[in-house]
Image 1 (tube, rainbow, N blue to C red):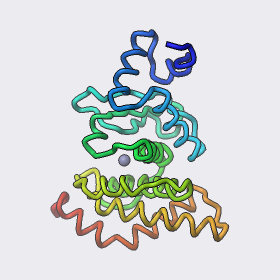
Image 2: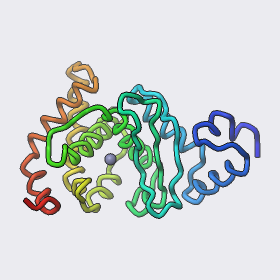
Image 3: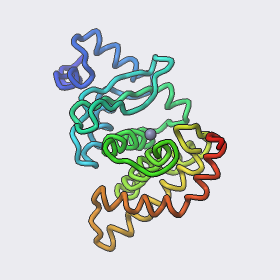
Length: 222
Ligand SMILES: [Zn+2]
């Protein structure tokens, strides 16, 4: 293996200490057509979009039956201790199959890092709103970077909801609206700060509040 395919930074990022562990990780991602560097690049570009540091650790959970692709928060006051878990088997199940979709999923997870200190209104401490806001910020990136999100919208659309995640049908509405709205904001010279984007998200939530609440009655019976 040429020397430039791995380095100390990569070892640190994945908390591995030997070439054997690196090979194992490389093979795990390789089954999905991804290199270790591609995964790091996806995370780095999402972090750069939000202007936040890399997470402390990227954890491959692809062979963990209960492993989820998710951001694990420790101290909500810090970005430095964030952990990003990636389960590529789960992403395949969710029909995430292209590199662009993978970049968007990682953007959603990094949006959770940005929102780790933000409280939203809504049922169950706004747990659905957290997801919708992460989707909204992902849609903003898709709009600003002109990323093709048509496939991820279809995948989302087909994904049922749960008590923690809204039905894909609703999530897709937020991605679509964000993609459109962020371009309008840019063209009207409205600063694309997180607070400004979250104001737009809240307006979008207001617009779809009835749909959200009707949908929630499937999971929250009260
Ligand atoms: Zn999420």
